[in-house]
Image (cartoon, rainbow, N blue to C red; front, top):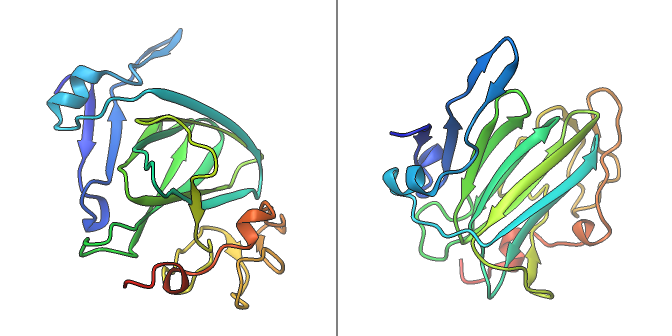
Length: 203
């Protein structure tokens, strides 16, 4: 279909998709369509994106796990420079895979895109010297609407690549590093999120 290949329901989690665009290359370089609404619709992905965001992070930065409370967003994420391990955690109340995660390595070379529907927590770990991260959202940013989960929650059990360290009862990054000795860098806020069982008491 069109210029993209879509792998649906990654890890058995409904809605998570990996999108790979056709790359047209020659001796001059390459060209690819990074987004086509027509191709998305043909693949059964009916989202209307309204905002594009971009961030830069240094090696060892871990952002997440974040979600929106009242104004959830579908996100289409990709990396234009560097390498990250990108994670989505299912937080949909009636989902049979509630609390389950799936992670994808996104790089400037593999050019993969990760589609994360509404109702998921999201986070990523930077594995390269630096990474530039881009994503589309299907709703605008709403201040003070962010929630979060401990990135190292043992119940979720995310296997972050190259990460060395042991859970000591909190989301603190103390004692964690990459295998090359790079210390994990987290925001103050991301070191204070609680675990799944303490955040979603209905489960």
